[in-house]
Image 1 (cartoon, one colour):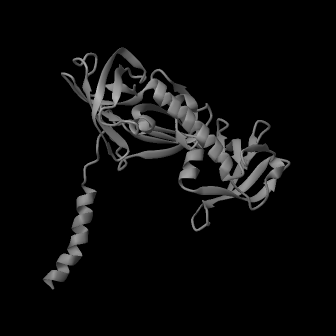
Image 2 (tube, helix red, strand yellow):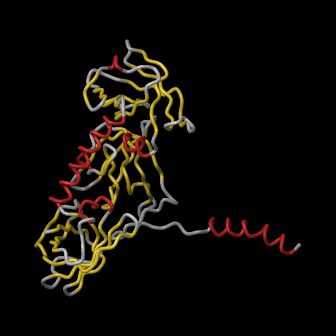
Length: 315
């Protein structure tokens, strides 16, 4: 009887322990994403300030405007690939992941995920149920590839004169869409309500992949030219330790023991400033999606401090 009682109580004890598990706090200078305390909100982008890395979006279906501050390590997922703030267009529909700042306001942002990334990542499509050609509207069901999971039915996708349609990576027309087709889209709002107005309609996966590959190429070029971003974990003497952000994969995967690198500090806008420091990699190891790098400099550390943002180049 005692053994049975203990077995019954153990799950309750585990549940209680999870219930009181402390919520992680975002600490400037560290890559922390407290997914146990977050809000993922569909919204329409209203504005972005690239210098301060702040912005405003309208919460979809309401008139509520929400401000956000993009954390240095935020995932900016555009065209189903990594991007930067400059890639997002005013009016774009996306999911904004927010966390509480030091004052308890939901304003710190750890990702913007555009509609293309969400649907591609979840392997979901808009299945065409009905077409109103005169109004340029398509009624759809959003579901996964085999329809074993249906997210929503009766979704209305709207189009306009500026909408582009793609099949096999080539331009097609609205008339090429048929009932039963499975689509993916890039959409924008119209300043009110919940409207899916299409910029792009992809009639097949190859067309979305074309946009995705183009975005990957743009991002890789940026990382190589502007430097891989990360936090300085330690800077003393001729030793620097860094945590490179997830978006820096194009550079991180090139790092080997002995790789020659160049380092510079960066400001709040993540742009490199100050003098360049030359060195070589002592070690580079991945911890999940982040890369921990140890660098031995050719001179003493100058212009770099712990918890500062930095940029790293392979030379």
